[in-house]
Image (cartoon, rainbow, N blue to C red; front, side):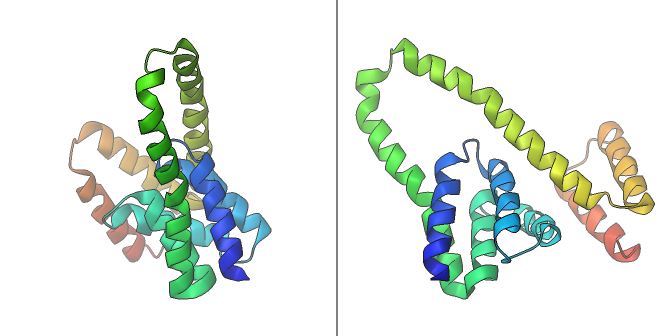
Length: 172
């Protein structure tokens, strides 16, 4: 039963999370409210792990969440069901694209979707911020890293490693 629920939930996420991996985060937060597969705090860790591992963030998070909920098979099912709507839509759109390429209604729909994607990603960032910056020390580290990122244009990998080391040393 858990595998069917995973399939349905991640199929819905794959269908409606327009904008890539970060757009899946609000949907995953919603899953924490309806199922006991993982907590909001575990989701914050899931996002960090998914961003630091190779591959698309959304797929990494689906695999991780599915594994948490249903083991190896759950990870496979959630990953497949997250990708399935995109596969179906891409095949369908590629066939219809030649006929609709100059359709003004299609252009308006795509223009309207962009702000929605920005808001979804912004809400996900806000939720992650509330979980991650939970006390004075994490707030100070966050401010310090923001200042460093602004003034010292280093590789994102540098800041990921620095953040991980600070978290370990400061036991955050």
